Image 1: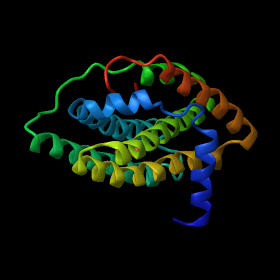
Image 2: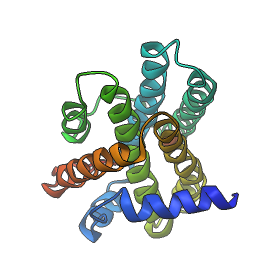
Image 3: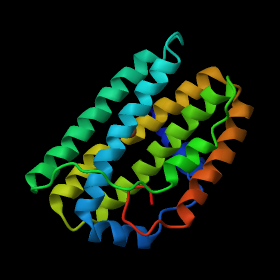
Length: 204
Ligand SMILES: [Fe+2]
Ligand SMILES: [Fe+2]
């Protein structure tokens, strides 16, 4: 990791996530590994979808497809990796009720451009940051070695992904505007997790 990137990660740790994940969440997650894996598979699938959706929406935006296309591919690789573990444990992909997290964040994205673009990058980055934080916790606390290794591997990419979304925003928007939207959306993100959804989910 180069110096500027590690600085970015530090920055995101300080600024992007207002509330830390609780021990209750960790205990719920490690007690329900299959449900978390299923939800995680959906998260990876959705992360690929978000990158593709942004590429499609801003098809003429210079420099966007160049970073979002590989990101989408990588998320699909993660999806396939989680799916393979599920299959090896005799489970198939199935629908799962989503926690309100994603919908709450989406509702807070500005409707008007160019702010819609900025908010979309920041929300995608916040979700990556939270995934990174939680995968790190699972990579330490899961009692299952295969799962600890899975999360330890994947979290490195998630750290890079929120760096990509941060850079996409920073290259296109005034730093003061970016920071003030980030503060507001980070508050929404943390508040969305305070009322914990009872079911074990990556973002409950
Ligand atoms: Fe991923
Ligand atoms: Fe990611």
